[in-house]
Amino acid sequence: MKRGLYAVYGSNAAAIFTSWQLVLENKHKFFGFKNKKCKNAEEAADYIARNLAFDYEVIDFERVNKSLLISNIDSIFSISELKK
Image (cartoon, rainbow, N blue to C red; front, side, top):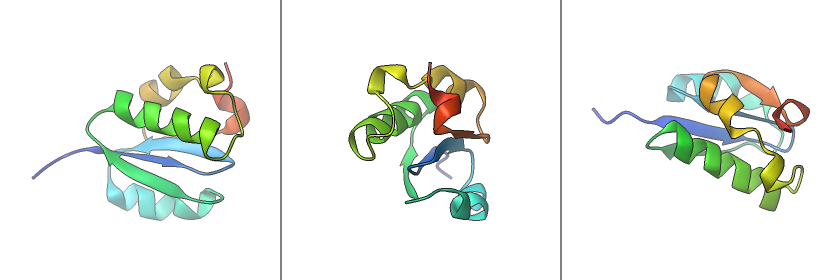
C-alpha cells in the first residue's frame, strides 16, 4: 500500500496529517478547506506555504514556519502560529 502525507489548509489554519481518516475528522476546522496528498513532509509544507501565500494571501510565503508543520505532524496550527 502506498503511504503519504496529507497537506491541509484553509484561510484560518494548516496541518500535515498522516492519514485520510484524520483529514476527514478535522476537515470542519478549516475555513475554505483544501488538501493534497504528498510524498513527504517537505512537499506538504511547501504546498501549504505556497497556497497560504498565493491562494488565500493570508501570510507572506517567506514568513510561513514550514519547520513547525514538519516537526508537528498531525497538529493543526492557526495562521498566526505559523508566522515566523
